[in-house]
Image (cartoon, rainbow, N blue to C red):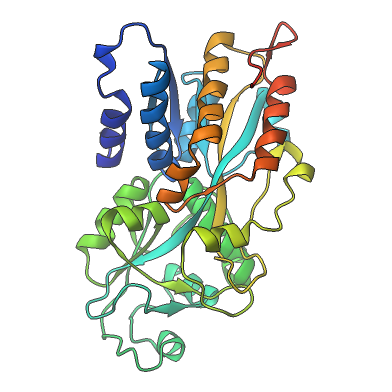
Length: 347
């Protein structure tokens, strides 16, 4: 059964599709992290070109499976594929925007942004080793906050998730115990908690469960006016999750020297850098498949690159820098081909 967010996105992306007969439709699936942004871009692209996007937010793991099976024109994933895997399947990936993963909480009497959590404490919570909100290790980080003696209910993703990959990559960087026991992946063997499908599933569980904590892409915090915790930065400060903090985390990103455009930006230095930041990626075949469909995929993302910065900022995503966009467009002309010729030359 599709999640509520999947249904909502599908309705948004396909609205009025029957009213336009001449337009083409491209299909995508994967990242729920990126789904709100792609929905906004698709609205404008539809109005401008009469072409539609059918994108299903089923989680990054599901999207990767579908592109490998050639059942969609592109996959969305917040877990970038290694150069080895890209080569194995003849795939190419590129970053589309940058966002942040945020601990979403439901603690009666605690206002949004008032709870402070270090990476080490966050890891212990999600390992089930800190089980109450008035635990001394949490109280030490929050003097005077008046935390209740309420059991903690952990909520995590039940599906293969790039959001999980970003979150567990961060926990592996800040907690040797987490790295040894669970590691970084799009799906891990959670020691405790409830599983929700998609960012929307996690959001729903947290919202309805007193004492709950989960992790979601920040656009879902905005969408649901949810409570959230601050996470201590690499430099020991407490930045707020917002576009400027995600941008600060990406400030040192060296995309020009990232093989296969594989790059993680978690736990970056900088007082204003949100520690659980990451890029979201589009993945498509380099030479296999319908050349016209692959060209339309690039046209869609070129449209997003050219006109979608406002949409990105409105949802607290960070647009890719202009220099990176130019580099990616050059890659399209050499990487995505048919008969040795580029399927799309950006203007």
